[in-house]
Length: 189
Image 1: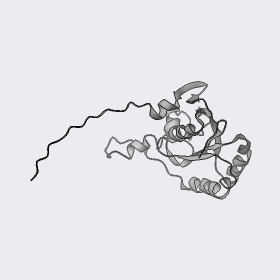
Image 2: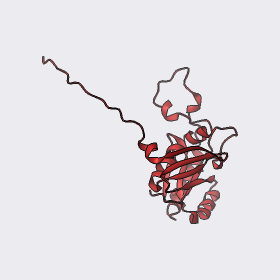
Image 3: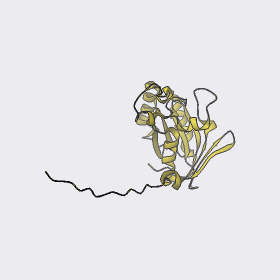
C-alpha cells in the first residue's frame, strides 16, 4: 500500500446511497425503536464477487494500482482519508461519485458505508487498462479525484469546497483527554 501523488482516486463497486450512514455507530449500540433503519447496509454480494474476482484474477497481478482499501466504517471518508496519508493529500470531487438516486447531501455521499465498494490509487497511465478490465467484468469504476502531496484532504461538491482539512488534524487533531487515577486502598481478607 503506497498511494503516490497524482494517482487517481478510483471507486469501484456499489453506488452510494443513504444505507450505511452511521453503520459503524449503529453496530456498537443497543437496538430500540429509535434506531435508524438507514444505518443498515443493503448488501450486494454479486457486485462484491465481480470486483473481487477482477482484482484477484487480473488487476492485482498486472500491478495496475498502488493501494486498495474498502469503504466499510466511514465510507469514502475513511477509505480516501486513510489512503491520503500515504501520498500526503487528496482532492475529491463528490460530483463524480456514482449515487443510487439524486438529492444526496455531500456529507451523505462522503460517509455512506458499504463492503461492496472499494477505493484504489491508480496511476493515470494504468487507468485505461484498469477501466477496461472492470467494464469487461461488469464492475462500475469511476475516477473521483486524485491523491496529492498538499498535506490536506480537500473535498468539493457542485464547484464548492465542502471540506479543506490538514491530514495531521484529520488523523490526530482530537484533543487527548488527561485522566488522573487514584490509588485505591484495598483491604485484604
